[in-house]
Image (cartoon, rainbow, N blue to C red; front, side, top):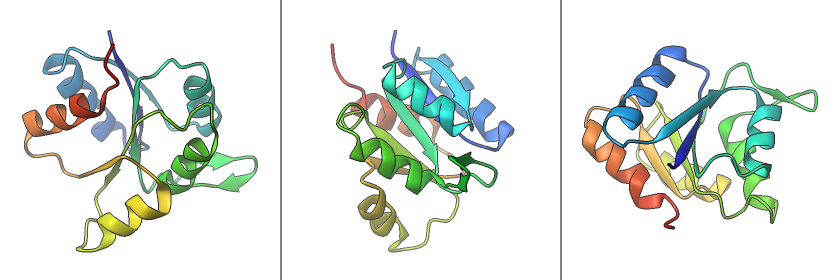
Length: 132
């Protein structure tokens, strides 16, 4: 079974995503906003894909406040985690933001909150899951 790691500081969003992914996608889900834990899970290959909230108001790593863009950059810069697919999730979807977020972070895709079309959301996650 494939595992999605949800990095999200809003528990309601995390619950909604978990429910959609487990019920519709048949996926296993982990959730954390703790950056050390995100790094551990990524390095231990305990997740097949990450849903990364862009804003992460409370996350700190090595003493510095970090957001989803920064965490994605760190994962993508590390050869051992670079191939892990990351989907950015953000509520601040202005025209042009999408491209700059993707470019800045190196993420693989982008989903806007709120997620209205649950099936499209699952399809997007499934499409990026590594096969095999």
